[in-house]
Length: 323
Image 1 (cartoon, helix red, strand yellow):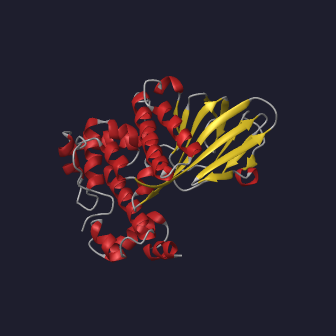
Image 2 (tube, one colour):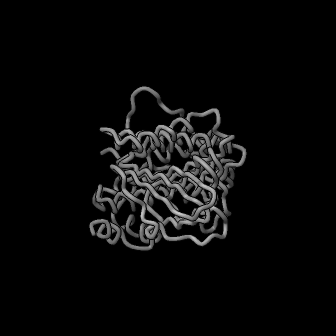
Image 3 (cartoon, one colour):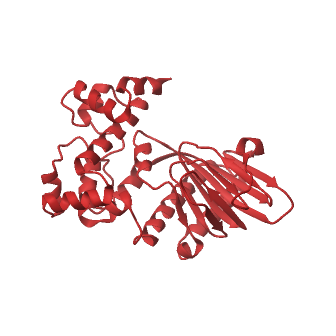
C-alpha cells in the first residue's frame, strides 16, 4: 500500500538526496485559492481570524503593520510579501496600536469566483494589499505545513530579481478580469507564489535559519530527515541514520538535537503520530492500517503511543473527523 502523499514517483526532476524541502512542497496538493484585494485608508485596522491553510499578503501600495501573538510587530512596505503557513490569527493596521475591527464586521464583498474586495478606513493615506488564502487537500498537508515557521517575511529588496512581483501582478489582473477558468489560473498562480516565497525565504535567510529548515539545509541531517519522511514506517535506529549521514552515532545525535531540539527517536515518533492524526481525522485509513503503515506491531501499542502524544485516543480523532 502506498502511503498517502508520501513516496510518490515523479517523472523528470528528482530531488537530491537531502532536498527534503522540494519533496515537502511537491506533496502539498492545492485544493483552492481565495484572492482578496484590500483598499485601506488611514486610520484602519482589521483582525484576521485563524483559517486552515496558508495565507499570504503582498503589499502593492503604502504600508501595513502585521501583529500576531508571540511574534514581534512586522512592517510591510511596498513590494514586500508575507507568508503565514499556519493560517495564523493576526491583525493588520496602519499603525501598530490601532484598534482592529473583526474581518467579518468589515464585510468583504464577493466580486467573482473566489475573489473578494475589501474597502475600509478613513480619508488618510491609502494602502493596497493583495491577499490570498490557500487550502490544501490530502492527509499530509497539515503535518507538512507545521514544519514551516509561522511567519515568512520577504522584503522587496530580497526578491527584486525573482518573478514574485510579476506573479502577484498576474494574480491581480486575473482577479479583476474574471475570465473563463480564472479560478483554476488563480490557484496555479497562488501555488507558484507560495513556493517562490518559501524558496526565496530559505535562500535569503540561510545564515539565520533555525529548527527544521536549518536541519533540512544541513547535508548530513537533511539526508536523515529525507529518509524518515519518505519511509516513516521503517525501523530507523540511530546507528542506521548516523551511517546514512556519514557521521558517528554520538556526533549525529548531538548535531540532530542541536538543530531540532529533540532526539532522532523523538522526531521519528512525532512525525509518525502527526501523520497518524491527519490520516485518521481525514478518514484515509482504518486504525489498523495506520498502525501497520507507521511501523507499529499492534493496534494496542500504536493506540498507547498515540494517546500519550496527542492526548486523546485514535478512535476519538477518527470520530471527530466524521462529525
